[in-house]
Length: 385
Image (cartoon, rainbow, N blue to C red):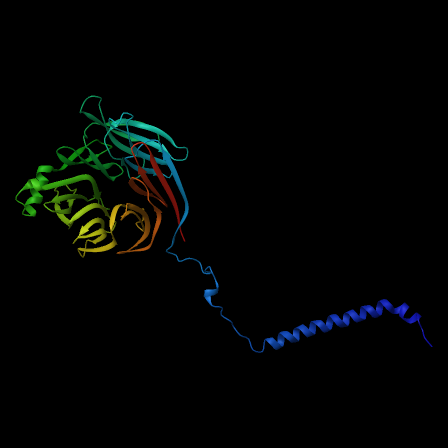
């Protein structure tokens, strides 16, 4: 006898019980599979050739370019220095190209402010970047007046005792100046000037040291000086017969002159904090950029080839240089300076027309190329990993 009412009355309970049995059985079944697979664990290493990109982070000595900016002006730039990332002090021509004027360029809005006209060539900016020294010629006369210019306020004041053509700061308030007769030490605050050496005295001393009979073959290249970290010596470049030599001159009242280094040719030099020097020149017919280790009196070749200009950042860990290649090709390089070697040497830009100069300002590199009536300014921002 059938009892059709039994299924109808207990259908919901029977279906729920069946689902519970299936669910619990599935859990125990999956667990058993995992137990079986874990009896013999294995590690499989996939070959790196299968991947197009590295999973590991870059090395700590890699320089990364964060951004690059280009600015074009409608005037020539002859020389420049950076106050900050948006403020440049520069030499540019007068409208009639009859002389030079000193100007301030704001890079963020491309606005130009003229500081003075009819000035000398070169930028004399103090190490703390708050003052500028320049000379201005009187109209129609050969006489000139030297001024101290406050960059923040725009005010200027006369320096009565200085007629230098070239100047290099050796402190925030002291600089070495070159006039027609001598090397001078000038104190900006007091206006006091002291002759370090007259050219005649210096020439006689060096020619006697080198046993050179004809003093006319000794020339001073005094458009640039280098001062020691302790501000006790200044380094000058001298051409002797068929060689170039760098001499150190003591800034003490009893001045002393010593030979520092010499090469067949020297175009640019930079004194390091430890007393060594980077020298761009020619040694034994090998042209390039050298590190001169002063204590060992040894030259180490950093880069072989025609280097036009180089600059170091503040902590002397990074270098930038402009290199000329065959076929009128040019490259801007950045690298780390590691002892007597360059690492991570990288071309960051090629074929800058009419190169003028490059300059570090903190973590940014500024490069200028200029023609007769326009200039191109490049700002590269870097980040070290």
